[in-house]
Amino acid sequence: MDIICKNIHFQLSNMNVPQIINKYHTGKLEGDTLFLDPCESIYLYMKGKIVPETKMNMVDLINSVFNEDLYIYYVYSVLKSKGFIVKRDGYRFFYRRPGEQYNIPVILIKEGEITDFSWLYENLPAIFITVDEEKSITYFRADFIDPEGNADSNISVRKLGKLDNIYYTTNTRPEWFGQEFMGVKILNKFEANYVLGEPGTEEDQLYSDLVKHHFIVKSGFKYGQNFRIYSDSMENHAEFLVSLMKREEWYKISRAIRLSTSVRKKTLVAGFIDGELKYIDIERLRDI
Image (cartoon, rainbow, N blue to C red; front, side):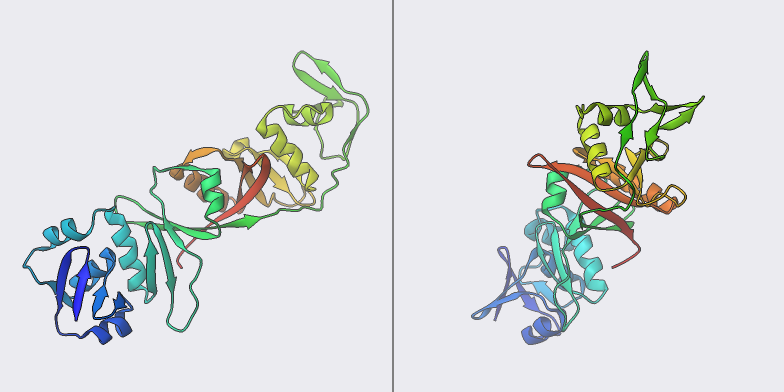
């Protein structure tokens, strides 16, 4: 029985091939040859179950079989330590417990990595795992969501006036629309553009779409995001903080999620796919 990873041949140490397959769930058996993924070969070597036929140290072994990001191996070893059966495809890991089906994939994403919305959306649902330089792990679960509120979104304005760059009116419906100030209702730029029918920016389009989904939409500035939204009444806390995403460094998304969690809100990330607004629900997990 031959055991191969890349061009490196291994021999068994205190174990036979059926035991490796059945206990560690590693390798792909083809005829009389067991082919190992680079992560599997390093894992079994570290466990003392295989050794290279040609004597080499750990550094030489890694250089011979592993030409990828070493964080890939670290994620693999973490998942294996939890008792999962693990298969991988590049940065994507598929895991399950014995006797169960594979879960949604775990995808390695670096803290400073630039991520665009379309890539994020195409890989859903998934758990994104980030490993920092201290090997501290953070998990995020992301999935599709089509948010829907119950608020009155039948907006009407009696007459819109303008003073310099400030739009105002004497009366609006519903009450949440606009902000009371000195006997009039002041409209922010998103509210004014909604009334004027001028959704010129993508942020304007996001505002209009959230209103059409029956949410009360207010500024998310103090939370570092575009909007905060209420599903029915402002007497309750806003359920979501919403940010429009194009291309962003992953640590900034992580920061937004952490802040949302600290104020007991969920994070929605919005973006355009083929000109249509889509939404992603992202939450931080303690573990998987």
